[in-house]
Length: 322
Image (cartoon, rainbow, N blue to C red; front, side):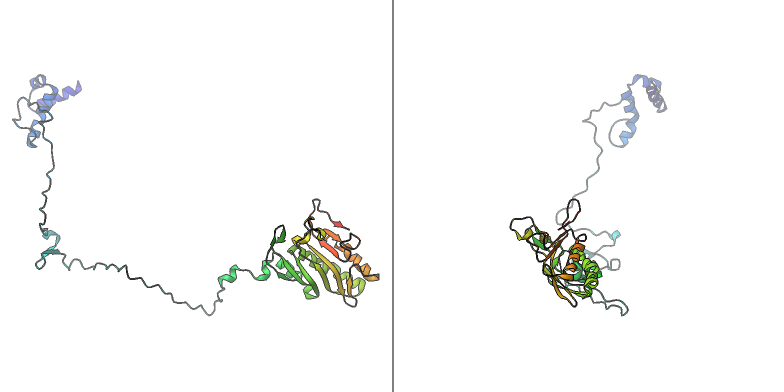
């Protein structure tokens, strides 16, 4: 009801009086109130007062925006003086005044012309700066550093030649070395003593700390050479075909046939007697501990003329010395 009262009040204010609000329907009243404005917009015709004309959607014109006139084909574009564009009398084309547009347009480079390669001038190093180290020297280690125990061997005074990794199926080692001398060069190693790093360290430490002092105490002479008859060798135990892989096949064993001592010459395993035989017996006994396997004359028929020393890993961590 409040809505109808508002409409009636609006009708009174417009000059229609209360009787018109009662006689007209709400739609007729709204149409009559809006009639003056619609006549100004050209939507309705007729007087501003009086009965409202009933209009259908087909009779009501739509408000529209006038469309621009299409320019005939081939017509010249008229210059706009407000923008500062003037026609060129000679060519009848519009040009841009040069006093307002001074920046030149960039030229496009011909794609068929190849660009010249850039050149860089070498900058001379400062006189006080250190010389640059080639990148290859920073990446590639020195030959002696290729062995994982190269530092330890050097501290033990071992002369060792690092070799390429050996891969022969079940046999081989990642960082083999060939031991050439011990005790800073005082003990020459005869034969091909190719072993792994751990074996080289153990062998060098045992020779310097145990065998050398033992020879001076028992034979009054220093050890000058050691004869190695076997190092790395891809074979079965005791050179038996089809037998379990020997520790020699891992570079984890070394066979020693003789020691050279000052004033005594070569003392060969299995052929010595007297003090020299006692010396070899103590050498053999001292090897049990640093090495996990020690075999020699009397162990079997395969080790009558040399000591077999290896670092075989056993389940209980024990040794086998016979």
